[in-house]
Image 1 (cartoon, rainbow, N blue to C red):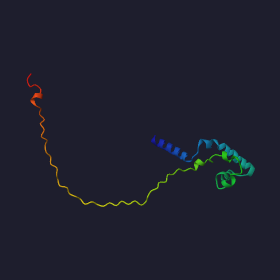
Image 2: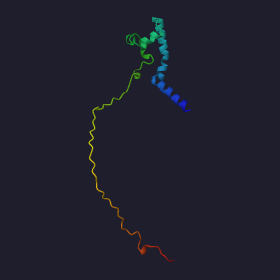
Image 3: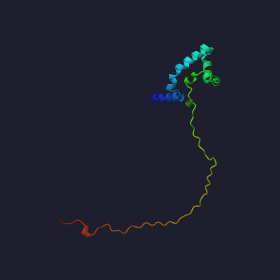
Image 4: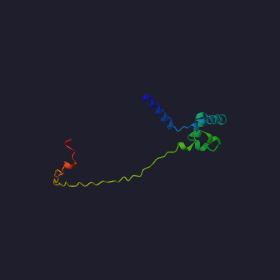
Length: 129
C-alpha cells in the first residue's frame, strides 16, 4: 500500500512540474483549430505549426494573427522562477586562542547542618490516653 501511495504522489508531482493547468487544457481545442487553419492556409504540418508558435520561429510569427493570445501554454507564469539569492560574506575567519589551564584549589567542605528535627515536647502528640 505504501508503494502505491508513493508512486501516486510521484506521478502527481511529475504532472505538476509540467505547469499544465485546467485553463490550458480547455484551450487545447483552440490549438487544434488554429493548427487546422495553418494546414489549410499555409500547408504547414503540425510540427511546423508548433515550431512557429512555440519554437524558434515564434518571434517572427507572433504578430501575424490575433488568435495567438488564445492558444494554450502562452502564459508567462510558466516562465516565472522565484529564487532567493542569499548574500553571504565568504570571508569569515574564526581565530581561537587557547587559554592556559588554571588549576583552582579544592575549597569545598561539606558540613552537616545543626538543626534539631525533634520538636519540643509541648508540640508532641499525647503518649498515654
